Length: 448
Image (cartoon, rainbow, N blue to C red):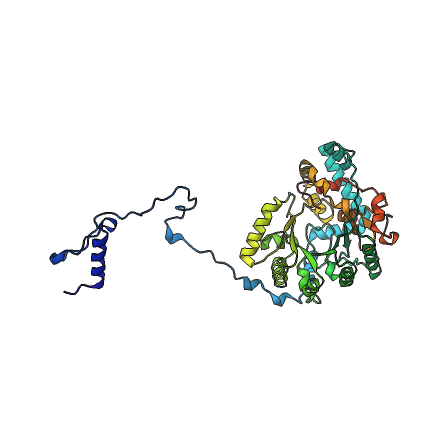
């Protein structure tokens, strides 16, 4: 009699390991159906130290796979050569808050606006019983409260306020409407100081969108030629890479070994577009992918910067960096080096934001309450010289926007310029100017 393959297999299993499988061989001449004598049990013990085993729901009909967006859709080569300017200008025209600030600027001027801001911050601190910054520092640090200038290591040049964006947190109030630009003569003198100051290790070029200044490439190329050893940083808003005439910018930056510090205030479209303008997130992701393709984020340095959306401190930098890398890597395939979290300074456009929302006092209290003495050893003003588009020199980028020049006691009046100096080392005899906005640089992990 021929036995079918399946029946023969069951017969073999039953004969070989009846206790394990609980099979009874087909019933001989009676031909009875196969029966199970015992319930099957696994030959291993389920361990209790497996944290995730057993947590998956048995309602498997409810299991669904999350749809992942294709990374290819973010490689928007069609955006390169198109401008964001018109959209930004349209948004500014419809922005009542921006228009109100523009009217006040026209009426009061830069000096009047800075004075008004300073009074508002001082009133907020007075109502909190907080003394002026240097005295506060002396009480907290058991010192005389004086910050000592070191040999200059960073030359930061604000090459102009012209920008294709108008971000809500911008402390320099850049936009397409700002036409202030550094001249070739001033840029050349900055290069002369770079050559004559051997202690400098970094040239930090910022704006506005610095790349839109006609002298940006001249400054970069000559700096690289004069100081092959120096670290050149481009503070890049990312969308500038797509502006008409900038299609070769990525190649230029790579050729001159320029490090990139790019601003991306969130890994979600809603938050970025709310702070920086409609469509900016999509353009930023496309720009980051183009930079990755050129080797930035792997072979060449590229770091990102986070600014809070509102009146709160940034999350812990290390934790947020992990989250950024997870979100940007998984959703877009983007790689970068480090993430820097920056506390928003209560000046200029962000100060207006706080004042309109009646949050200035609360924010100043937040900064004071989170004073971190560890930040005082790495403040920007200790080893940085900040140069404005007009050549005037300042302790830091924030003092620059408030008009507190080195060698002057009056905002937006007098002070030294690059044409008064042979070397940036000449500035070490001048005291650092501090005021009530400095609480921003010493809160949490700081803003330097």
